[in-house]
Length: 171
Image (cartoon, rainbow, N blue to C red):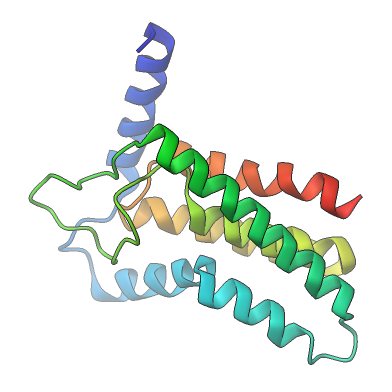
């Protein structure tokens, strides 16, 4: 690993150590962040996209583009996860994470990517919702660090993948 990557990794781990909740944290904090984090899961992001189609102001084309964005960005995340193979934080430490993790790979965050893909997909069609949707997507990303399942860099790259994937689909 090059010296600049080592410094970047050390910074990422230091920020994680400051932000991540401990297993002894207050139950209310754990419940709050766990609730937020599930909004970035496949069930929530795909389910909410399909549910939005029932609203009279939402066209099928908006839902379809968002589903494509979710699919393409997820594919990119999975390819990168398996290529890089960065282990999750605390995976081999005695402290358990505060939520179940879908796999052993940390980089990039699929939940952060899905939440951002959903937000961008609908914000592009409904600009008035852009700030609340993007704010919620950022909270989902932050929750992944708070719950101890991702480093901050994992979250930033996951969100970036969603934004980069969105560009050709939403032009």
